[in-house]
Image (cartoon, rainbow, N blue to C red):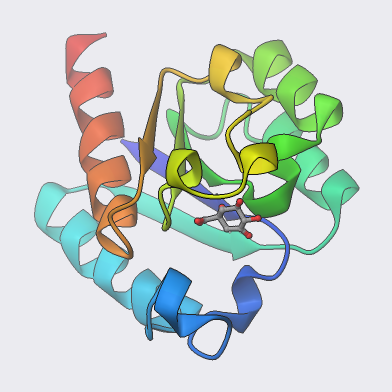
Length: 145
Ligand code: DQA
């Protein structure tokens, strides 16, 4: 199984960015944890980050035929991006939405996710563990399919 992890804007700043909200792990730390667990589970992963909406859209489009699942932390684009939503719907690759923080316990504008309706599910609020739970979720979805 091959899983694509995509990270949206400002997640390259993890470690120093509002650590009280997002934790002290850098994105590289999280990637290392995900890679270690993926190896145990026999999952091949690709792990990417972009601050550009269009680049994320292109990566989702290119995932067709190459990846079995996507784990997506769309960051702020979660709340704004029709383009990301349309890309996920277009490729029909099982996608799990993840967030470090609990978006439903924060400002009201974060409560709405434009991508949630086209994702298989949402994991929100478990810090870096959200990434490991996201990995587990796509493995489970893949086993069921
Ligand atoms: C986030 C939550 C978003 O609301 C925010 O814009 C982010 C990170 C999270 O992982 O908690 O950049 O997706």
